[in-house]
Image (tube, rainbow, N blue to C red; front, side):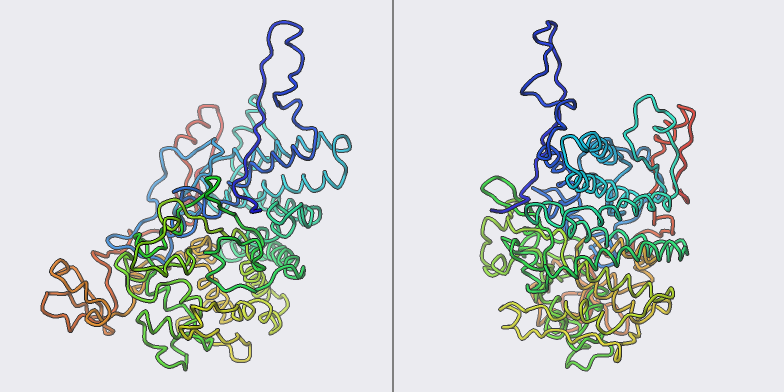
Length: 609
């Protein structure tokens, strides 16, 4: 039976009594805060209410928040026609929510100014405390208090990634506790030290398993802990120059990853495409947690529909992203000895690059993509096999039923190897070849599926310290090994949750400047006469453009088809508005600042805003 289809929260409601003594007796059928906290089963039901917020997978219906492809498309990897989407330019009038509905800020890839989930996790923890040594045993208490502390740490990790300093609460605050309700923001380091303590407790006390692998357990929690501690450790290093804290958080990222990797429960036994298009991930050894979907009970999504070759991808993969993919000899294309490695058209790149390129993108130009490079990563091979015929119903609209990987081994090992490499720059142990072999090279050795094999796709050669590439495009301030680790993340997580957050923690938001990084405003190399003649039509006169290798831009006139060879210039393309480093963190709303002032308190605005 599929697990984690959609986790329903059994609400705790407050009953109202009548007037008579008889009716004043406690209800035997209505749950309230006084009679709910009596069993481990009720703890589980309450915890289930966190799942759709923190483990959304492909989300549900047409909802895009925290979903790949439709949610995570604001980064230097993706380009649209017209003017590029911009960052915020001024503080909003209001930025607050008290709803438990998942909230989302696109250009920060995280939540709005909302502490409802903090309160919920604190309430959970306090109620668990009342049950200790009464309704539940010590081991049961340790597990469920770990669950509550994990969700609190998860929420604060997201809030800090968006806003930096935030008020920290470790208890449910009453309506009359104004000094707490209107406290100013705590330093992010103070907050993340509290999160660190929660996460250490989780690793020490959460169950290794809890019935089945779709209920939160230590391995799942450790995967997320490695994510959040890597983020904060590198933020402390690159943004705050705080080596002490960077080491502390990165050490925990390594410890959490080690727990998963040493378990022997997970391995790279699946081809890449099956991680995202499979109808059932339950037996996939790379998947640590997944969200399952089933049309029979109305739990479906729409992410595969936007990979079905028919639906538009307005934010589409650009030349800068494509160039980052390794060739299958394990070298960046400027250093590769693979035949045709320097040819940057779609078919040549499919044939010469790391297998993830073929598994991520369609192998021919598609007008549905703003750059003609179409991502079909989130649909199975059957979903595109019928093209150009009509797609099957389950691959359209919001009726998709392919499972979503929520946490997978590839992220854990890449978090691990990056944390180790960063620690090595701060007097830690050097990364060894054995470290690379169990992380990056294990990924390189993933199986290929039948479709890839039939196309002649080859596995990428191992990364070796003895022959480590020195990419001529490498940033001078990034060591060659860390550069290659970052490249692996870029290839692995296209359209997933990582890219914008990686740029922020590495202090590389300048990559979002298309003027300084012109490949970001281009598609791949194309010969329109031979590859896509259907665009050589009157409707494209004075609109269709290509950029030659020497930088010359050629516009289609209707009679110069032979000259339409070069990098695609997306229609009406222009760079996003200029931005400054203040966009690393989000402003809070002016209304919230005023509300504090009305009560006699101060709420500090985010620096720069």
